[in-house]
Every structure is written in C-alpha cells, then in structure tokens.
Image (tube, rainbow over all chains, first blue to last red; front, side, top):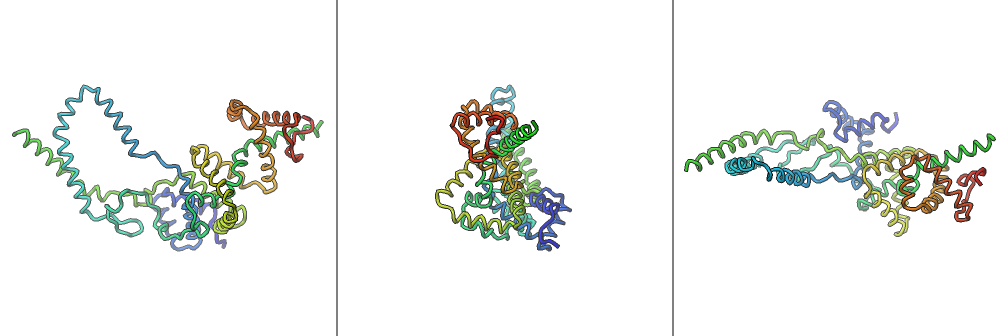
Length: 194
Length: 181
C-alpha cells in the first residue's frame, strides 16, 4: 500500500477541509483522518501549505462597508419618500422598544450556555467575538511546517512556491511562448515540405 | 400620560418577545460547525494543490520540497530575496482573475520537462526585448489578440529587429525561421 492518498481521496479530503461535504461524508472523512496515518499526513500537508499561503487569499470586501453603503442608499431614498413622516411616528414608539429588547437580548445571550464546538470545546460566546470561521479541529494541533519556521507571511508564500516566483516572468508569457513555438514549428515543417 | 403608558406597553411586548427568542437564537448554528467554515480563498486552495502537484512531479513529498526550497532561500543574497518579494507583492496586487490565469499557466509549467522549460526561458529573454519595442498602445493591442495572432506579430517584429541588427539570438530554436531571413 502506498503512503500517499489517491487523487480521489485527496479531492475528498480537500472538499472536507473546505467544509463542502454533507454531514455523512464529512463524518467519514473525519474518521479516516483520525484513524488512518495516510489521511492524517495528507491533512497535515494541506494545512501546512494553506498556512503558508494564507497571504494569498484575496480579502473579501468588508461587510461593514457594504452595510454602510446599503444604509446610505436606503437613507437617500427614504429622505425623498412621502412615507417619511409616518415612519418617523412609528419610530417614536419602536426605537425605545427595540433598544430595550436589544439590552434584554444581549443579557439572554450572555447568560445562555455556549454551544459546543466540533472539537468538543465549550466556549463562551463573548470570547468568540469577533466571529472567525473555524477550520476543522485538527488544524489547532497541526505543527507548523519546519521549512517555514521563522519566515513572515510573504517569505513563506515565496518559499512554498519558489518555482512559481522564480519563473513568474516566463509563466506569465507561457501561452505566447507556446504559440511562438507552434508558429515556428509550422514554418520549419513548411520549409522541409517545400 | 396615555401616550407614555402605551409607549411602555409596546416596548414591553417587543422586549418580551425578544427575550423569549433569545435562547433559540443563542442555540442556532454558529460559524463553529464544519459545514459553516468559510470557503478558503480559491486562489490559496489552488496554490496549495499546485505546490503538492509540483512536489509530486518532482517525485518528492511536500515536506521534502519545502525543505529544499528553504535551503535554496537561505542561500540567496538579500538582493535576490528582495527580488522574489517584489514578485510576490506584484502577484498579490493582481486581481483574482489575473491570479487565476497565472495559476493555470503555472500548472502547465509544472508539467513541462526541464529541457523545454530552459528553451522557454531563453525565448522569454528576447520576447521581453521584442515586446519593449512596441509602443504602449501596440502592447495593449497585443494583449487583446489571440495567442496565435499575438505570436505572429511578435515573430514578425522580432525578425525585423534581428534584420536591423537590434536583436541577437543565441540559438537556432529561438531564432527566426530560415525562410524569413
């Protein structure tokens, strides 16, 4: 038996890592990772590379910014609306009530037992703020790749893909270079054919 | 007075409703569940897979490949390292579509044999000179063309530069065809 995952196995692992599998399949992969050294090793590799390449992730636009833009647009539309005065009257009642409800809701959340994480760790909701997407529990125990220790994010990304950066200029032109190669091949053939 | 009492009553009803709903909200699924893990950046994920593929093509595992890269990195001069960092920064500033396109070409590059890679590196040296000879407008135009048409125009320009003595080529495989000389 080889000590590496087959391609379909690695794809399944990768899909699980991305949280893309339905619960039954996810549980199956999790069991394999827990019990099969091949799977555990492949996951460690995947985590190591992901960690090194985190810097490459394109940041999503801030939800705060989106919310502010939408709110501003809504405000502009509302300023011109004939319903404005009616809404203001409603707000006279609703705003204090909503404020009171928000305080009570916050108290309710604070005193409610925290949900357990997949890794089995009960955590206080307050400690989760700001909310961050959590990877599978295994990531928390995976060691940092030795080869990348002591490097910052940029250097880690470079070292992890040294071949890409070394030949980036060529790689960026690869389509053109191959087209030139084809063109010259055709010319050579034509020359030999005549 | 009536308005004040009504005001408080409505507030109380709403607050009570929210209080009843609070436990349910607190028990609702959170971002902690595996299914709710935010999708990794597709670029990062693909790079991760390409790093593995690159190692596999070289017949080693990822750890061995990373160790080899680290040793190579340690041997670089500060200037050389800075050049790599510059390339990294340039990459990071590209939009996802451009990054995606480079990844596609990198995957192809990984699968190309070493000798052919060397040939492309040599070709790329004169390609830079030829492309520089175009005006910015012509370069923008070139970008819009199909790769075959772009190649045709580049080779045409290259041959003209060679004929004018402005470009010297170092090997027969990267030089213009005899019929065009």
